[in-house]
Image (tube, rainbow, N blue to C red; front, side, top):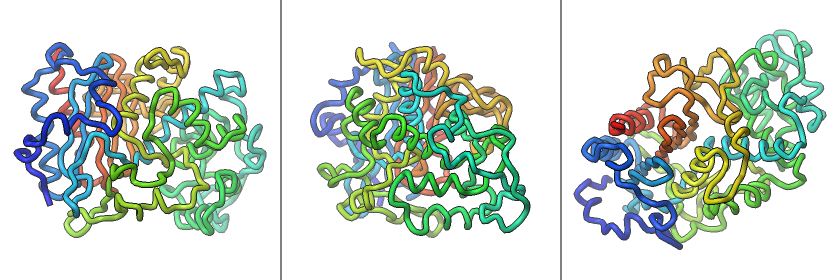
Length: 422
């Protein structure tokens, strides 16, 4: 089912900009697009483009947001958060943000770096001794049944984990089935058990020699636990979520938080969406055992919360007088730490920082984002980016997985920058 632009426009403005406890506009000031350097007419191109994906039943609903100079320039919800029950998407809807957890977990570890607990080039085995015994597979076979196993040329460092250059076995390259069995059967009882299993699997390559997307940020999250002496959920709550007033960001939910949890969809026949995980009390974010806190992809959040987090990073570590990190630390996080290693997941012209992808060559990346921009997305087709040159934060939220058959994320980025004329 679809929601038309006409029906959307009939929704009262008070409803479109409401949150359960307070108004979005009371918390993040709005700025007239013209004053922010945008063309109002060109911004109007965003909604029809997003609506096309909804009308074709390729995604249930879409939230798009643009901030410039710390203020909201564009904020729009379209379509449904629950297609079957025809519940319109709201601006306080709760989304599964998956890998958009990675920048948060990475910044959590960098908080501890600032406190002097470790250096980035320290071996991970200093805190997780089992990584000192890890071997490298010549064939990427985690089962060890093919090829040869050899000692790594050097130990895995904490920086390797933050940049996905550790060599970890993964579910994308190598013996994927053996990896999945080893990591998930039976289900780990804790972060510690999960990471211990990972440390015992042969590496796909020598540390630092390749970039491969992996569960490295899960290790980052567990390092936070070991160094801080707190579980990752508590550390994030006390050191990031509470200070930034990210009141709807959690690993698990007790309930639907007033019916605000979105439903999640999967492409079915002809890529038309069908329900995968409901937004009801039957959602696995409510019913799952609460013993794994995935730094690589476990959080749910709202547009409001994630914009606050991203604006803190864009502000060089501070939001509304609350400082999370020093400016020099944020600058280090957003540097390209992978030199010219191919970043196969995002393609040419991109590099990787400490928890964020970064744009290093706009031409090769075929992107409107400025060089030096930092970004990352989630498996449910969410994405957010920080453009320091343009003083801009972009955010798009929807709930469909997989999403590689649609260009909605890159479309929104193009539509954002074509409207920016100053």
